[in-house]
Length: 96
Image 1 (spheres, rainbow, N blue to C red):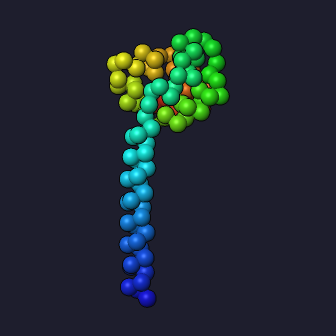
Image 2: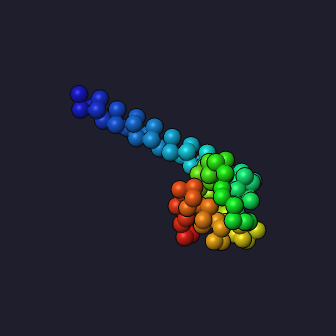
Image 3: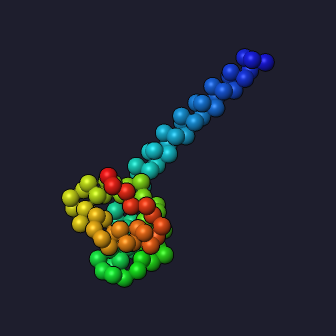
């Protein structure tokens, strides 16, 4: 009985490792700043973010630090409007 429990534990641990690495890979593949185009008017003016913007912002949340570190994107995602949009959408604005 003890041997069966150990084997089952090993199988579960292996499954966790496999699925967690696939999740990281999937997250890395989804980083695409073009997906934030619905947010452009809210990021560059005082207009409120759309539902589509908030949805995309939540999808891209794991990527935001990378966008902030990118000199070509930083002006759009590291400014007061970006913080306002993130707050309105319920996305935490982290320091990277």
